[in-house]
Image (tube, rainbow, N blue to C red):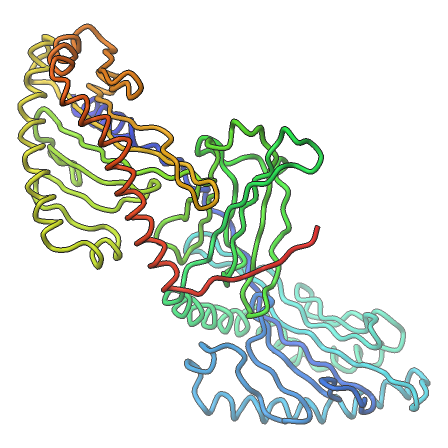
Length: 506
């Protein structure tokens, strides 16, 4: 009996609340690399130095050094805030030492290669590590320590074999020299597999703390006529201003992600301000537009961002159980408001208070709004408790079993430019997960789904003012609240982060 009750509760509470599943847990890849570049002679070009060094965390520059400034400096705000002054002092001394080493060795290689000193030659070194993260588990993936000369591979470290690999004959003397110092190879292997990974994790922790306090990514949706087929629409979803390259973006139909092969993607691209952007598109029939949404998820977001193509909704959902259930988080009566599928307020039979679920709801709606809302929810709780008993008797159901009565009502609008148009209104009741009674907005009358709903239909249709109020609420009052709430929500988003403006040519 307990299993069937729990199953029934879960199934019934999902009737009106089908959000769609989040993407499965994916493997994240992260990297930390340091790149050093030495020129054989100075070059009279702005921004080109004889020696440069930089640190890259997930391909974003976190520190830099050049032969002109001769100082290791932070390139991310969180690096400046988190790393102590002695970190930068020691880093500066280390970079100066490496600059001297490179100046000596680029000359050695030029002589070994018999290259002309009047020509420009380049010696580079890249070393660092990559990890894979799934959930809380972090695994070392690979380490790289490699040298190149004039853009060609020269010498690299084989991490598994703990020895150096020469790519050209001129690298053999260096390979023999370094392989003959086992402690050097041990240190290199230990740095790549342990010390580098520790720094990578530390930097990512600092970065995540910063990002959790920053603004969420800006998500925009666009719909345009297809260039190739004028009967088709091209839906585009753009996420921009995010730092994490593992940000997940997809286009969904009926809240199910489309296969990647159906989507056209730009891939993740850098913005001018160290953030990234990602855009995906799909072509559809125009009459399908309302079935699609843009879904963006990221580990720093408490919940995914979901935006529909110019379609918005405001719904209130009430759920009453015929008896209490001893399950955490399951109340005999609950009510919630949903703006574009995001919960904006809630009420339950234990707390018996209507409370805001969005910060802007708390800030914008006056105290009397919540007081009146609480009284309204309490009245509806009483109404539901009476009527779930009435329905059980009408259905001939056993009072020892669990039964559920639900009501969903609200409206949807479509936005065309600056014009907002009423799309549809819904006021419908469900009993034990099956359709029971719904309001036909066009005909201003109730429609029964089962014989047991006929007495209620007759009673309500015999009160014309009730049906007029229902129609008026769905088409006018609900739409007004929806526009008001969206205005408040948009103001909150504009306050959190200024809009990014992009131009594209394709």
